Image 1 (spheres, rainbow, N blue to C red):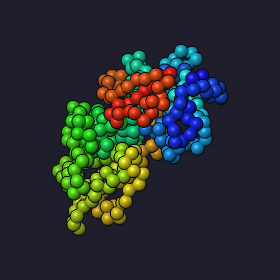
Image 2: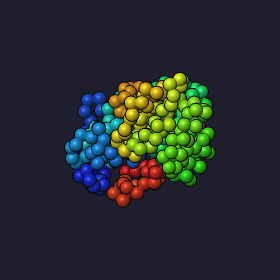
Image 3: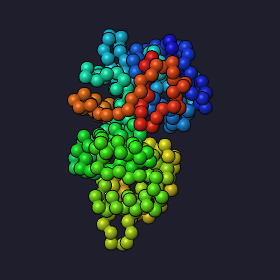
Image 4: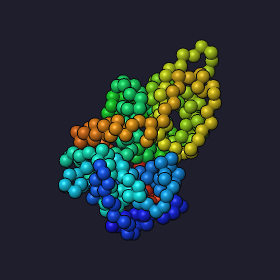
Length: 320
């Protein structure tokens, strides 16, 4: 079959021939119609993600949309290595797929399900978000961040604050539901002061962090309370992505002087059963009222050219 194939961790995958998958017990063969180029797909392909097997060669691609042998159209959340979803056919566990509503097209579903998991499943399953709470999205100008703003609003957030660097994208997230924006282009002192004002005046309950690194350090500095008689409110901080850096420096005083509770959100933090149940609810919600996101559909043969050329606010979806 034709597929994108990773033969080296330091080079983009190439479009070439690869062995056809064969289904094992409780597995299904899927004829792939669309698969998204998500950040986790790139991290797995370059061997840097904690889920990487370190084994070459393999077909990249984590999830996708396609047809089963009986003609049913499904979303499938994972595939069995080395058969990823950037191929004409893939193989998945029977328990990892479910039907796609007729109201949604293949490309849209393939584009939004992975970034939706990072906020919808994180909010509903990881921290049991409650209607009326307020959310700050750190890294709100990318595809996942823009979707997170919309999801937080759809779930009943009282206030959503969007933080990011791209000013045009920050202007766009206001239209998507953000009540306030914070530019990360400010110098450190101004940025910390912006966070301090937001937390003091409007009470942020949840932080969705797609960046980590230095941007997270500045935000956590803004949470830190001064004085011995401060009454720090509880802040649930969800670490989701690390595009700005894999580590941070976390002073002990930040934890002792605030109501900060740190969580991680990713594969392993919540059971796959709960994630899949949550995503089915999200899919029904998206069918009822569509979410907005930038999507670029492209033929899989262009994978090498488009691998590193995607715009931050646009999700590339490959069609075999």
